[in-house]
Image 1 (cartoon, rainbow, N blue to C red):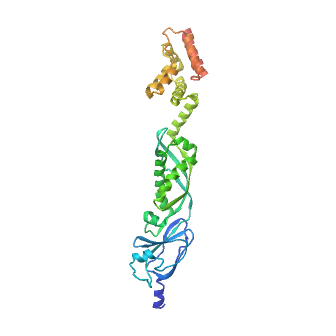
Image 2: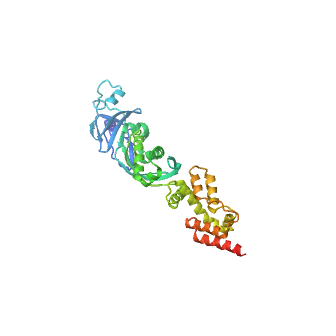
Image 3: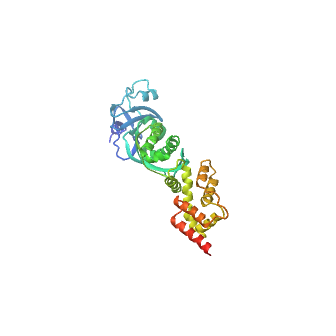
Length: 349
């Protein structure tokens, strides 16, 4: 091998990227000690962009096509190099290729629940999962803000950052929305639209274009979901009261009665309380209303509470009150029969 052949091999006549590896977003052409031949060809395929970088500063950007490399089509690089005349010798520059194809079917999700503000529940923690797709829209900005001078930059690398951006944007977007979480959870397309609008702006800062974004599932932590289920049941069992809290209080009263029946004394003990002059509904409701101490609960207490019974109230009156509670659905027929049997047993001795 002659000396001339050795020198010739140091020149690069064609620069191109075949995208042999799946998932690579940015690839630096291996220059090593080679130099780009003046008049050499740059081949940029569809869905690619090539960027010339001099000492970390982005110079010229080329889209798809075949480009002959001269100072005429490398004006920024020529200026950076302070070439005052057309160069007729090989030159050095870092060349990066970027894939602009759409990265589809990418998954996003909340590893841990995120806390958001909600107009109905004040503060709630939610989990959500879905899919999205994106692409490099501005290679210069992507290089400057994210990929930098690394030889290879993959979508796994960038998606580590995108997950954090997505969750932060999701929290601020849903928290600032005028639509409640329940309405959005019932309409996941609406939720996706709300989040996507904010994500587009966040992605643009890094030279990325958000193509699609959807929400596949959304859920609450188990303890919060249980509380929500109870509230929904309250609305159903509260007779669709205009005051939701009133329905919730009534549901709590009804739910506590079967528990009382399982305790020592059961409903018989409650029946004795009635005989002492305190209505059963009043005992339960006053405890709940006092604990909640809200103006909305006051009408509930007045509606549910029964007037205090005289000390000498008859068995018939006591049974009549229990019958009224059963008719309203606050106690079951079995509870009524149990209390009735206990009172009759005491009466007979």
